[in-house]
Image 1 (spheres, one colour):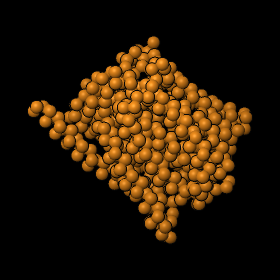
Image 2: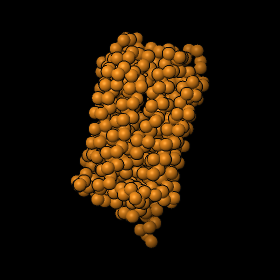
Image 3: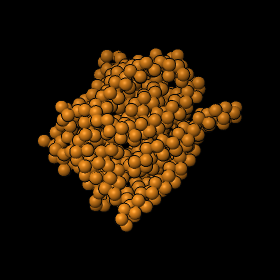
Length: 459
C-alpha cells in the first residue's frame, strides 16, 4: 500500500527554497531519464549503424515534439487544475478532475497515433529531408506514433501526482522504463539488426511499462488523487477547465515545434554531416533544457496550490526563488556542457570528426543562452499556475515563433548570413524578448490578484 503522506510534499507551508529543491530534483531526474530514451536511440544507432541513422533519428525529434506536445499540454492543464483544487482543499473536485483526466489521456493518445501516422510523410517531405535519411525517419515515426497512448497516459498520471506534491513516484517508474529501453535497444540493434526500427520499438515498449506502473500506483493511493477505473467519466465542466489551461499550453509547445521544424528544414539542405552534428548537439542541449524546465513545473504546481489557497505573497516569493534557482543551475550546467562538448559529441558520433565540429558550432551559439530560456520557462509556469492560460501562449507565439520565422525569411535569406550560425542566433534572441514580455505580464497579473485580495479583506 502506498504511503501517500510520506511521498507528498506540502507546498503551502515551510521553507520555500528547501521545498523547491526537494520537489524539483526528482522532476529533474525524471526528465533526464525521459530524454535518455531518445539519447539511447541516438547513441546506439551512432555506434552500430552510422551517421545516416543518427541523422534519421535526430531529424524526427521536432516532428514527434510537434504532435506529442500539442496533447501533452492537456496534462499541464490537468496539473494546474488539480493543484488549485488541492490548495483550496476541494477533494471532491480533485476526484472528478482525476477521473476526467485519464479518459482524456486515452483519447489524446489515439489522436496522436492517427494524426502522426497520417501526417508523418508529408511533414518529412516539407522539411526537405534528404533521400538517404527519409526512409529510416519514416520507419521510426510509424513505430513511435503507434505507441503514443502509453506516452499520454504516463504524462497525465505524472502531472496529477506532481500537482499533489509527489515527484518521486514518476521518477521510480520512469527509471524502470529507462532500464527496459536501454536493454531492448542493445538487443534489437545488435542482435536482431533492426536499425532505427529497433530503437523506436524499444522506446515504445519502455513507455508502456512506465505508463502501466504509474496507473497501478494511482489505484493504490489513499487520498483524493486515487484512481478508480469504474468512476472514469469525462465531466464536461472539468474537461473545459483542463482545456482552458491545456489547449493554449499545447498550442504554445506545438508552435515552438513548428519553428524548430522550420529551422531543421533550413539545416537539412546543408547535408548529412551537418545534420548529424546538429542532431547530436541538439540532443545534448535537450539535457540542459529539461533540467531547467523542471523549475517551470515546480513554479506551475507551487504557485497553483498557493493561488488556490489565496496565498499570493507566498506565490510571488516562490516565483523569485524559482527564477534565482534556474539561473544558478543554468550557469553551472551550460559551462559544464560546453567545456566537455567535443567529448560529449563523440559519444553520439564515432565516424565523422567534421560532424563533431559542426556540433560544437551549434553549442557555441546556443548553449549559454539556455539560462535565459530557463527563466522564460519558469515565468511561463508561473503564469499558468496563476490561471493565465492565454498570456504565455500569445507572448510565446509573438516572441519565440514570430522572431524565428521572421529571422528565417529575412536575415537568413541574405547571402552573407545564409549560414547555420545565423540560424542558431535566432534562439537566444527569441528567448530574451519572450522572457521580458512574460515578466512584465506576471507582475501585471500579480497586481490584479493583490488588489482583489485587499478588496476581499476590506469586505
